[in-house]
Each structure stands twice: as structure tokens, then as C-alpha cells.
Length: 82
Image 1: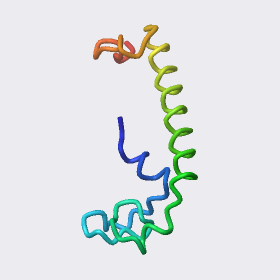
Image 2: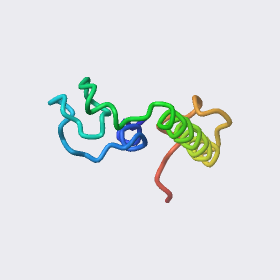
Image 3: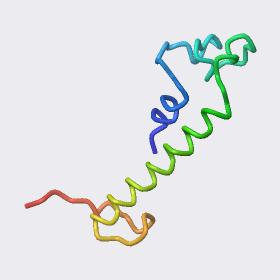
Image 4: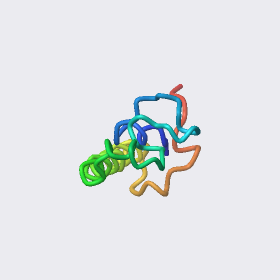
């Protein structure tokens, strides 16, 4: 699963400051002043919707590969068309 989507959903703007503790959106910082812009209740709903949509879409892919459950996917489930 891609972490990138989970960063964009709460509002990541790719400021490239994740490792500096100065994230302007408050996502990857411990500074209280910067965290004020991050509303956890609002963002939790957005993340939950993202997860549900991701699960659905991956399920559609799994179904189109001929498996009933996602865990049945294997490398050979996806192959190039002749």
C-alpha cells in the first residue's frame, strides 16, 4: 500500500520538511503551533473515506483478476495479455 496517499488526504503539500519538524500543515511535526492547523476529527473522516475507497478499488482489481478475496492475489494473478 502506498503511504503517499495517506499523506495527501490530511493535507500534505509536499513542503519537503518532514524530517525537520517544521511541517507547515502540522502533519509531521511535534510543534504545537504548527499542529494547530491540523483538525484530527475532520482529517480522521477523510482518511476513513480514503481507506474505504482504496479497499473497494483494490477489491475490484482482485475480482477482475479472477479471485474472490484480496489475499488470494498472487504474482501470477496479473499477467500481460498475449
